[in-house]
Image (tube, rainbow, N blue to C red; front, side, top):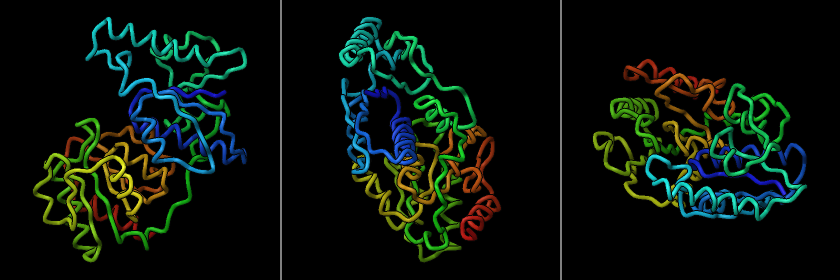
Length: 295
């Protein structure tokens, strides 16, 4: 049995699912001898991503991130209890022929597994290839994971924009989002734009959106993404979901580490913007849209 541990962010889980599917499809295999161990939140997302081609099992041992992975907000007793709970769960599946795959090299995974047989990733060029090489040790290049680009000329009809991210420092600046929306309205006046604004942080931008979504479940949010023909957003779960569902995407990063964290093929396609220590300019956005429309 191949076991993948996931107690971290949902975006990490989507990356794991993506590389697993790529591996099984490349091997022309539909093996279901895969077990995810993680949170109930991860298990729920797994159902939303479910593919009949690949059947994976899920054992959710905690309702959310366990104390061992949330040390700053947990007591020593909670962290210790969490460690023993997770090790007990792993040991319940362990036998001499088991192969264990972990997300990334981390002291917490070392404490849980306590095994010299764990395959750790070696830093490559991108988190997707790192994750793949962690699981399968094939030493593949990131280009092997890149999906064919969709035809953007016919995709800019229904656009979903999500300026939010789990980490506040990754969220879009209101000035940047305003500029993007103004530019979209100028060049694509008939495009239907949906905007996620869960905490009413981007109220100045509402006038440019056809639909402002202030509350949405994970299920409804994923369905909204799948129903959209183009996605624009910050570095977040939905950026990786866009790659998973093969939806054309324009990413907005606030740092220059995007080569490592971006979905495969995104950087080479030049469908991204970087905003750091400054706001985006009209020229930045216009260039990005022209690249997209010309592909």
